[in-house]
Length: 77
Image (cartoon, rainbow, N blue to C red):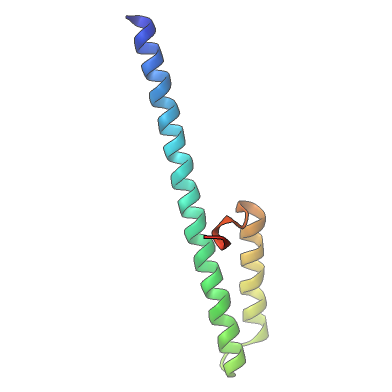
């Protein structure tokens, strides 16, 4: 009986870890999409004359930092 409970506990811990990883992945994708949207908005504002090159560069830098940390998987989705 103890072996069964140990295996069940291990499986539950693995499932919990997989769930946490999936949540982290979803949150990183959402953050990446938000940064991509902000870059688009900054670029659009710059081209329309109401934004600055610096705002566009800041948005691009933030997006590149996110990609360095989390990868670019959100761009394929």
